[in-house]
Image (cartoon, rainbow, N blue to C red; front, side):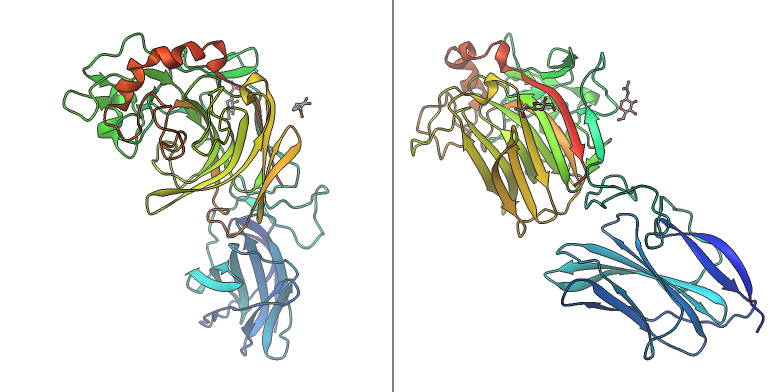
Length: 470
Ligand SMILES: *[C@@H]1O[C@H](CO)[C@@H](O)[C@H](O)[C@H]1NC(C)=O
Ligand SMILES: *[C@@H]1O[C@H](CO)[C@@H](O)[C@H](O)[C@H]1NC(C)=O
């Protein structure tokens, strides 16, 4: 049999594969069978497909959690009736593995891919493509895959972090940075929420807007500044087309006579996010910030899955750091829950209830007195929380939502039923009740109790944010 050797570049499952393929004009239909997959006891896994007369070569490509480079194996001979590939990569819970197979059969190339998810050491097949002969390679090539070790371009310890689709990421790579050293806030990176949050019995007492006075960059720092309305009147409040509400635009974009609340927002503030410009899964995020000080103020420095919007109600959150704005606040149990108490962790929702997995650190000063470096190291199996290089908590896998790509949110809000939970606060310490229909009005009417605690320190100031691959 006469074979001609052709070098061909195939774009395949997001990775460019350099294949040495042999062609001949003979063509017999062949269907690649399902790939047998086995987790090996020690570490690693094994895949195989059965041999059939006519099979000449098998090429496997494994992409784990969409990261590159992919693992590859080129098999030239069957082993006891199977085309087997053993890989040393140890798969973790929640890993998604895409297995692509190219088979050279009677000199024609056939391909097939399958996606599997590892769940508690079991395997679920989630998606299969049909086996097909390839004459037109798909053109979605994004990243370069490498044969084992041969074409490494730089020393790189492969990171588990996933940022851009198909991007090759090494541990320690800086993936995102904003030092706010530009004259203006970069509005390509950061998008504002524009909506009012007091539409609901349990919500917050602010409207978020993109006004210059509520968020701006000055001297290399981002300022998010809550401002008190000069008057709070009954009547309509409309954000019109600028409104970014997703879940309840009817309530969040306007307040009109006859709606639940009929007063204008007592406080204006800002919340901004990177949902459209940057998201990542696993990594280390460091935010150097000064938290806001003032009664009933609450900072958002957090991550949220891209399956949600910044505007989503009851979205799961990874809180990088928060401390309440109050200088003095104690729970019913006499626990200090003032701004001296720092928290970080995860919030998920179960049947409409918040389930919080928080770690905390109590200081003898308010966290808003000074800048601190707040760090969250988000690994495949663990979240580590740090302040100024001191670890104050770790959360382990088994919790929901360790495996979704997330974006960054910064904001300052007022109130909030979860942030200032009536169930843990003594009666009447708050000038309003969360579930009271006119909470915003009560809050505004009692402003003599909180307004004096606000001042130039009631802004949240962010010096920089950086995300590194882990
Ligand atoms: C704004 O950020 C984008 C990336 O999000 C970047 O490409 C662009 O250069 C930035 N603009 C300025 C003026 O720095
Ligand atoms: C916080 O980070 C900055 C720069 O990233 C560094 O200069 C400073 O020493 C850090 N501060 C603390 C207390 O760790």
